[in-house]
Image 1: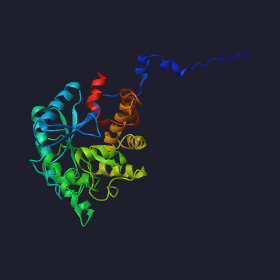
Image 2: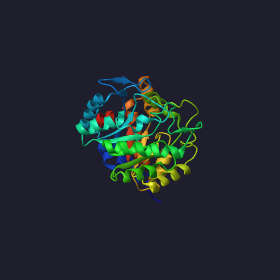
Image 3: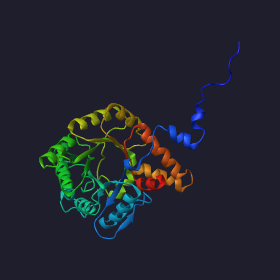
Image 4: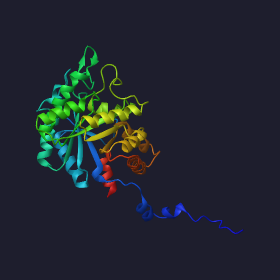
Length: 326
Protein backbone atom coordinates (compact mmCIF):
# COMPACT_ATOMS: atom_id res chain seq x y z
CA UNK A 1 0.00 0.00 0.00
CA UNK A 2 1.37 3.35 -0.99
CA UNK A 3 0.93 6.45 1.12
CA UNK A 4 2.41 9.91 1.25
CA UNK A 5 4.80 10.18 4.18
CA UNK A 6 4.81 13.98 3.91
CA UNK A 7 1.90 15.93 5.43
CA UNK A 8 -0.39 17.83 3.07
CA UNK A 9 -1.22 20.33 5.79
CA UNK A 10 1.79 22.37 6.78
CA UNK A 11 1.06 25.11 9.28
CA UNK A 12 4.57 26.47 8.74
CA UNK A 13 3.59 27.67 5.25
CA UNK A 14 1.74 30.57 6.93
CA UNK A 15 4.80 31.49 8.98
CA UNK A 16 7.47 31.49 6.28
CA UNK A 17 8.13 35.27 6.22
CA UNK A 18 7.13 38.47 7.99
CA UNK A 19 4.68 39.70 5.34
CA UNK A 20 2.82 36.38 5.35
CA UNK A 21 2.74 36.35 9.15
CA UNK A 22 1.34 39.90 9.14
CA UNK A 23 -1.25 38.93 6.54
CA UNK A 24 -2.75 36.14 8.64
CA UNK A 25 -2.24 37.64 12.11
CA UNK A 26 -5.36 37.40 14.27
CA UNK A 27 -4.76 40.60 16.26
CA UNK A 28 -2.95 43.88 15.75
CA UNK A 29 -2.14 46.91 17.86
CA UNK A 30 -3.72 50.22 16.92
CA UNK A 31 -2.61 53.57 18.33
CA UNK A 32 -6.26 54.61 18.46
CA UNK A 33 -6.88 52.02 21.19
CA UNK A 34 -4.11 53.22 23.53
CA UNK A 35 -4.56 55.50 26.55
CA UNK A 36 -1.68 57.37 28.21
CA UNK A 37 -2.00 58.05 31.97
CA UNK A 38 -0.70 61.37 33.33
CA UNK A 39 0.05 62.55 36.88
CA UNK A 40 -0.57 66.29 37.26
CA UNK A 41 0.37 68.50 40.21
CA UNK A 42 0.10 72.25 40.97
CA UNK A 43 2.66 74.82 39.92
CA UNK A 44 4.38 75.93 36.73
CA UNK A 45 7.08 74.47 34.52
CA UNK A 46 7.56 71.49 36.79
CA UNK A 47 8.39 67.87 35.97
CA UNK A 48 9.52 65.22 38.45
CA UNK A 49 10.52 61.70 37.44
CA UNK A 50 8.90 59.05 39.61
CA UNK A 51 11.69 57.04 41.22
CA UNK A 52 10.00 53.65 40.86
CA UNK A 53 8.73 54.35 37.32
CA UNK A 54 11.76 55.36 35.20
CA UNK A 55 10.69 57.55 32.30
CA UNK A 56 7.33 58.51 33.87
CA UNK A 57 6.98 61.97 35.41
CA UNK A 58 4.61 63.98 37.50
CA UNK A 59 4.11 67.28 35.71
CA UNK A 60 2.45 70.65 36.02
CA UNK A 61 -0.42 71.59 33.72
CA UNK A 62 1.74 73.62 31.35
CA UNK A 63 4.20 70.74 30.96
CA UNK A 64 1.31 68.33 30.41
CA UNK A 65 0.22 70.47 27.45
CA UNK A 66 3.59 69.95 25.80
CA UNK A 67 3.49 66.21 26.53
CA UNK A 68 -0.04 65.84 25.16
CA UNK A 69 0.82 67.87 22.07
CA UNK A 70 3.69 65.51 21.32
CA UNK A 71 1.47 62.52 22.03
CA UNK A 72 -1.28 63.72 19.71
CA UNK A 73 1.29 64.27 16.97
CA UNK A 74 2.42 60.66 17.36
CA UNK A 75 -1.15 59.33 17.27
CA UNK A 76 -2.10 58.91 20.94
CA UNK A 77 -5.52 60.56 21.28
CA UNK A 78 -6.65 59.60 24.81
CA UNK A 79 -5.23 60.63 28.21
CA UNK A 80 -6.20 59.46 31.70
CA UNK A 81 -5.58 62.16 34.31
CA UNK A 82 -4.63 61.65 37.95
CA UNK A 83 -4.29 64.64 40.24
CA UNK A 84 -1.84 65.35 43.04
CA UNK A 85 -3.61 68.07 45.04
CA UNK A 86 -2.10 71.04 46.84
CA UNK A 87 -3.53 69.70 50.10
CA UNK A 88 -5.26 66.57 51.37
CA UNK A 89 -7.91 66.19 54.05
CA UNK A 90 -10.27 63.63 55.54
CA UNK A 91 -12.97 64.33 52.94
CA UNK A 92 -10.75 64.72 49.88
CA UNK A 93 -12.25 68.14 49.16
CA UNK A 94 -9.94 69.03 46.28
CA UNK A 95 -11.33 66.09 44.29
CA UNK A 96 -14.63 67.93 43.80
CA UNK A 97 -13.38 71.52 44.01
CA UNK A 98 -14.08 73.25 40.68
CA UNK A 99 -10.74 75.02 41.08
CA UNK A 100 -8.93 71.81 41.96
CA UNK A 101 -5.99 70.46 40.01
CA UNK A 102 -7.95 68.15 37.68
CA UNK A 103 -10.78 70.53 36.70
CA UNK A 104 -8.13 73.19 35.96
CA UNK A 105 -6.12 70.71 33.92
CA UNK A 106 -9.15 69.55 31.93
CA UNK A 107 -10.21 73.10 31.06
CA UNK A 108 -6.69 74.04 30.00
CA UNK A 109 -6.11 70.92 27.92
CA UNK A 110 -9.48 71.06 26.18
CA UNK A 111 -8.96 74.72 25.32
CA UNK A 112 -5.62 73.90 23.68
CA UNK A 113 -6.54 70.51 22.25
CA UNK A 114 -10.35 70.26 21.96
CA UNK A 115 -10.17 66.96 20.07
CA UNK A 116 -8.05 65.17 22.68
CA UNK A 117 -10.02 62.51 24.56
CA UNK A 118 -9.70 63.38 28.24
CA UNK A 119 -10.51 60.75 30.85
CA UNK A 120 -10.58 61.63 34.55
CA UNK A 121 -10.06 59.13 37.33
CA UNK A 122 -12.87 59.43 39.90
CA UNK A 123 -11.62 58.26 43.28
CA UNK A 124 -10.79 59.69 46.70
CA UNK A 125 -7.41 58.07 47.39
CA UNK A 126 -5.28 60.79 45.79
CA UNK A 127 -7.11 63.50 47.76
CA UNK A 128 -7.72 62.04 51.22
CA UNK A 129 -5.22 62.41 54.06
CA UNK A 130 -5.80 58.76 55.02
CA UNK A 131 -5.22 57.47 51.48
CA UNK A 132 -8.36 55.36 51.23
CA UNK A 133 -10.65 55.36 48.20
CA UNK A 134 -13.70 56.48 50.15
CA UNK A 135 -14.87 58.48 53.14
CA UNK A 136 -13.81 56.98 56.46
CA UNK A 137 -16.45 56.83 59.22
CA UNK A 138 -15.60 55.30 62.59
CA UNK A 139 -12.38 53.83 61.24
CA UNK A 140 -13.94 52.15 58.18
CA UNK A 141 -14.56 53.19 54.58
CA UNK A 142 -18.29 53.92 54.38
CA UNK A 143 -19.57 52.76 50.99
CA UNK A 144 -22.87 54.65 50.93
CA UNK A 145 -21.51 57.92 52.29
CA UNK A 146 -18.77 57.82 49.64
CA UNK A 147 -21.23 57.57 46.73
CA UNK A 148 -22.38 61.19 46.93
CA UNK A 149 -18.76 62.41 46.94
CA UNK A 150 -17.92 60.33 43.87
CA UNK A 151 -21.01 61.60 42.08
CA UNK A 152 -20.15 65.21 42.95
CA UNK A 153 -16.60 64.70 41.68
CA UNK A 154 -17.77 63.21 38.38
CA UNK A 155 -20.12 66.15 37.74
CA UNK A 156 -17.31 68.66 38.41
CA UNK A 157 -15.06 66.85 35.92
CA UNK A 158 -17.82 66.66 33.31
CA UNK A 159 -18.51 70.37 33.75
CA UNK A 160 -14.80 71.08 33.20
CA UNK A 161 -14.99 69.25 29.87
CA UNK A 162 -13.97 65.64 30.55
CA UNK A 163 -15.12 63.29 27.81
CA UNK A 164 -15.03 60.23 30.06
CA UNK A 165 -15.20 59.81 33.83
CA UNK A 166 -13.63 56.68 35.27
CA UNK A 167 -14.79 55.65 38.76
CA UNK A 168 -12.10 53.49 40.37
CA UNK A 169 -12.96 53.36 44.07
CA UNK A 170 -14.83 50.01 43.85
CA UNK A 171 -17.76 51.22 45.94
CA UNK A 172 -20.98 49.26 45.40
CA UNK A 173 -23.44 51.36 43.41
CA UNK A 174 -20.87 53.93 42.28
CA UNK A 175 -21.82 53.74 38.60
CA UNK A 176 -25.52 54.27 39.28
CA UNK A 177 -24.81 57.19 41.60
CA UNK A 178 -22.57 58.83 39.01
CA UNK A 179 -24.89 58.13 36.06
CA UNK A 180 -27.86 59.60 37.94
CA UNK A 181 -25.88 62.69 38.94
CA UNK A 182 -24.54 63.25 35.42
CA UNK A 183 -27.99 62.89 33.87
CA UNK A 184 -29.58 65.22 36.43
CA UNK A 185 -26.87 67.82 35.68
CA UNK A 186 -27.50 67.52 31.93
CA UNK A 187 -24.29 65.63 31.19
CA UNK A 188 -26.11 62.75 29.57
CA UNK A 189 -23.42 62.34 26.91
CA UNK A 190 -20.54 62.00 29.37
CA UNK A 191 -19.14 58.49 29.11
CA UNK A 192 -18.55 56.31 32.16
CA UNK A 193 -15.58 53.95 31.96
CA UNK A 194 -15.82 51.95 35.15
CA UNK A 195 -12.97 50.15 36.87
CA UNK A 196 -15.44 47.28 37.18
CA UNK A 197 -13.01 44.47 37.95
CA UNK A 198 -10.26 46.07 40.04
CA UNK A 199 -8.29 43.62 42.11
CA UNK A 200 -6.48 44.20 45.40
CA UNK A 201 -3.15 43.73 43.69
CA UNK A 202 0.44 43.99 44.85
CA UNK A 203 1.27 45.68 41.54
CA UNK A 204 0.08 49.18 42.52
CA UNK A 205 3.13 50.15 44.59
CA UNK A 206 4.78 52.54 42.11
CA UNK A 207 1.45 54.29 41.48
CA UNK A 208 1.05 54.92 45.19
CA UNK A 209 4.45 56.59 45.20
CA UNK A 210 3.49 58.66 42.15
CA UNK A 211 0.18 59.84 43.63
CA UNK A 212 1.24 59.77 47.28
CA UNK A 213 -1.83 57.62 47.95
CA UNK A 214 -0.66 54.79 50.20
CA UNK A 215 -3.33 53.99 52.84
CA UNK A 216 -2.32 55.34 56.23
CA UNK A 217 -3.97 52.40 57.98
CA UNK A 218 -5.18 48.96 56.95
CA UNK A 219 -5.50 48.04 53.27
CA UNK A 220 -8.05 48.14 50.46
CA UNK A 221 -9.01 44.47 50.44
CA UNK A 222 -12.50 45.12 51.82
CA UNK A 223 -13.49 46.98 48.66
CA UNK A 224 -11.01 45.99 45.94
CA UNK A 225 -11.46 42.45 44.67
CA UNK A 226 -9.92 39.23 45.94
CA UNK A 227 -7.61 37.97 43.19
CA UNK A 228 -8.63 34.37 43.90
CA UNK A 229 -12.07 34.98 42.41
CA UNK A 230 -13.05 35.06 38.74
CA UNK A 231 -16.84 34.73 39.04
CA UNK A 232 -17.03 37.75 41.34
CA UNK A 233 -15.21 39.79 38.69
CA UNK A 234 -17.87 38.90 36.13
CA UNK A 235 -20.66 39.78 38.58
CA UNK A 236 -19.06 43.16 39.24
CA UNK A 237 -18.82 43.88 35.50
CA UNK A 238 -22.42 42.83 34.93
CA UNK A 239 -23.65 45.07 37.74
CA UNK A 240 -21.76 48.07 36.37
CA UNK A 241 -23.23 47.56 32.90
CA UNK A 242 -26.74 47.40 34.39
CA UNK A 243 -26.02 50.62 36.33
CA UNK A 244 -25.00 52.48 33.17
CA UNK A 245 -21.30 51.90 32.47
CA UNK A 246 -20.46 52.49 28.80
CA UNK A 247 -16.98 50.92 29.03
CA UNK A 248 -15.82 48.38 31.61
CA UNK A 249 -12.28 47.66 32.77
CA UNK A 250 -10.12 44.88 34.13
CA UNK A 251 -7.22 46.03 36.33
CA UNK A 252 -4.40 44.93 36.51
CA UNK A 253 -3.87 43.31 33.12
CA UNK A 254 -0.80 41.08 33.16
CA UNK A 255 -1.93 38.48 35.71
CA UNK A 256 -5.62 38.70 34.76
CA UNK A 257 -5.84 37.65 31.13
CA UNK A 258 -8.29 34.90 32.07
CA UNK A 259 -10.65 37.58 33.40
CA UNK A 260 -10.17 39.65 30.25
CA UNK A 261 -11.10 36.69 28.05
CA UNK A 262 -14.11 35.70 30.16
CA UNK A 263 -15.38 39.30 30.15
CA UNK A 264 -14.88 39.63 26.39
CA UNK A 265 -16.85 36.44 25.74
CA UNK A 266 -19.71 37.36 28.09
CA UNK A 267 -20.29 41.09 27.57
CA UNK A 268 -20.78 43.24 24.48
CA UNK A 269 -19.63 46.65 25.74
CA UNK A 270 -16.09 47.93 25.04
CA UNK A 271 -13.51 46.34 27.33
CA UNK A 272 -10.55 48.33 28.67
CA UNK A 273 -7.56 46.88 30.51
CA UNK A 274 -5.07 48.77 32.66
CA UNK A 275 -1.45 47.71 32.45
CA UNK A 276 -0.56 49.08 35.86
CA UNK A 277 2.50 50.74 37.36
CA UNK A 278 4.03 47.55 38.73
CA UNK A 279 3.87 45.91 35.31
CA UNK A 280 5.60 48.90 33.75
CA UNK A 281 8.28 48.96 36.44
CA UNK A 282 9.01 45.23 36.18
CA UNK A 283 9.59 45.48 32.44
CA UNK A 284 11.75 48.58 32.90
CA UNK A 285 13.85 46.95 35.63
CA UNK A 286 14.44 43.74 33.67
CA UNK A 287 15.37 45.74 30.56
CA UNK A 288 17.77 47.93 32.55
CA UNK A 289 19.55 44.81 33.78
CA UNK A 290 19.85 43.49 30.22
CA UNK A 291 17.72 40.45 30.94
CA UNK A 292 15.10 41.19 28.27
CA UNK A 293 14.68 43.23 25.10
CA UNK A 294 12.27 45.94 26.28
CA UNK A 295 10.55 46.64 22.97
CA UNK A 296 10.18 42.98 22.01
CA UNK A 297 8.71 42.07 25.41
CA UNK A 298 6.42 45.09 25.33
CA UNK A 299 5.20 44.24 21.83
CA UNK A 300 4.52 40.63 22.82
CA UNK A 301 2.71 41.73 25.97
CA UNK A 302 0.47 44.30 24.27
CA UNK A 303 -0.52 41.84 21.53
CA UNK A 304 -1.24 39.22 24.20
CA UNK A 305 -3.70 41.65 25.80
CA UNK A 306 -5.38 42.17 22.44
CA UNK A 307 -5.49 38.42 21.88
CA UNK A 308 -7.07 37.96 25.31
CA UNK A 309 -9.83 40.38 24.29
CA UNK A 310 -8.84 43.92 25.22
CA UNK A 311 -10.39 46.67 23.10
CA UNK A 312 -8.64 49.54 24.92
CA UNK A 313 -5.23 49.38 26.62
CA UNK A 314 -4.25 51.91 29.27
CA UNK A 315 -0.47 51.86 29.55
CA UNK A 316 2.37 54.12 30.64
CA UNK A 317 4.07 52.95 27.45
CA UNK A 318 1.40 54.44 25.15
CA UNK A 319 3.47 57.29 23.78
CA UNK A 320 6.50 55.01 23.43
CA UNK A 321 4.38 52.45 21.59
CA UNK A 322 3.16 55.11 19.17
CA UNK A 323 6.73 55.85 18.20
CA UNK A 324 7.49 52.14 17.94
CA UNK A 325 4.46 51.59 15.69
CA UNK A 326 5.84 54.16 13.24
